[in-house]
Amino acid sequence: MAFFSRFSSNLGIFLFLFSLLIAVASAQLSSNFYSSSCPNALSTIKSAGCDASILLDDTANFTGEKNAGPNANSVRGYDVVDTIKTQVESLCPGVVSCADILAVAARDSVVELGGPSWTVQLGRRDSTTASQSDANSNIPSPTLNLTGLISAFSNKGFSTNELVALSGSHTIGQAKCSSFRTRLYNEANIDSSFATSTKSNCPSSGGDNTLSPLDVTSPTTFDNEYFKNLVSLKGLLHSDQQLFSNGSTDSQVTAYSNDSSSFSTDFANAMVKMGNLSPLTGTSGQIRTNCSKVN
Ligand code: HEM
Ligand SMILES: *[C@@H]1O[C@H](CO)[C@@H](O)[C@H](O)[C@H]1NC(C)=O
Ligand SMILES: *[C@@H]1O[C@H](CO)[C@@H](O)[C@H](O)[C@H]1NC(C)=O
Ligand SMILES: *[C@@H]1O[C@H](CO)[C@@H](O)[C@H](O)[C@H]1NC(C)=O
Ligand SMILES: *[C@@H]1O[C@H](CO)[C@@H](O)[C@H](O)[C@H]1NC(C)=O
Ligand SMILES: *[C@@H]1O[C@H](CO)[C@@H](O)[C@H](O)[C@H]1NC(C)=O
Image (tube, rainbow, N blue to C red):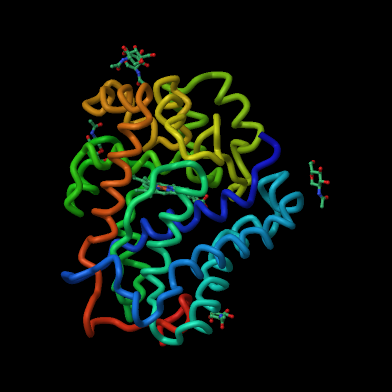
């Protein structure tokens, strides 16, 4: 597990960022929203995303081999969003929202890594009130038990089935040692050889920011190995393993572990639903010039 491709990881970040974007209001989105105002928006997002990832890929040995080092957290996707935004702005200034860029890039990432595709509805606008405290209170914690996860998703209108399907995005990407240390050193429902090897990358103290793959088997492929891992007690986060821990979601995890096409279908449908969750549209919000800050 020494080497982890930054290429895939940078693609995965879009999915992660997009999942944090569960926003506000009520909407009329459409898949052809930019067809006259910026006809090349989607192809530019796709190619700029790839270009930026390839640039970062050049530093793969530096940032990737130890999954650590000073850049482990800073070179993780925001730069890529910045690069995409810069290219889209030069093409069509003030037209394409950062929220739509993330929605498209999340879909493109999944496809690039071998997962399903779906049609992205467009026309979201960007929030003018970035709220760290909202983000902190709305984003589910990896320490939640199954009841807590079900309730966090239910609060956003998602079923328990959708919780399980969306959690399958942890088939790619990485987590910091501090996000799973407690599970690693204290829980019994963890495969012992998986625990031993993961501990080498996550000591009982220190190394909080050292990264490990969320899917130990195929960290850079969008497949159903995440669910197979859960069945073999190799979930990295406490919240991951909660989905297969003698509870009501065990059967769905087992089903996905045997049938990747049902996972793909359910995941794509749930991503469309997540993307349509009360976005800002019309005259609400703004089109940010720089995705990192309000205008
Ligand atoms: C079920 C509730 C969820 C919990 C508790 C959760 C928690 C986490 C945590 C703790 C991390 C690692 C962050 C870090 O340590 O730096 C993570 C990473 C990630 N999550 Fe989730 N997550 C959940 C659902 C989702 C959903 C719904 C998606 C997208 C559909 C998603 C996509 C990702 C991705 C792609 C990463 C990897 C990011 C990277 O490699 O930089 N997660 N998640
Ligand atoms: C990066 O590592 C790979 C495999 O270890 C090696 O083949 C490649 O030459 C290295 N690239 C650079 C730029 O050092
Ligand atoms: C789940 O977590 C909540 C909050 O920490 C706790 O009150 C509840 O008892 C837990 N449920 C189970 C089944 O462990
Ligand atoms: C399910 O329960 C059994 C019996 O209590 C236990 O041995 C096993 O570790 C549990 N499985 C998980 C994944 O928690
Ligand atoms: C799926 O696979 C598991 C383990 O390989 C097996 O026990 C189970 O019966 C299979 N079938 C279904 C429909 O879950
Ligand atoms: C966007 O804003 C951030 C934060 O102020 C800044 O670091 C970055 O250079 C800006 N990007 C561009 C392309 O201007």
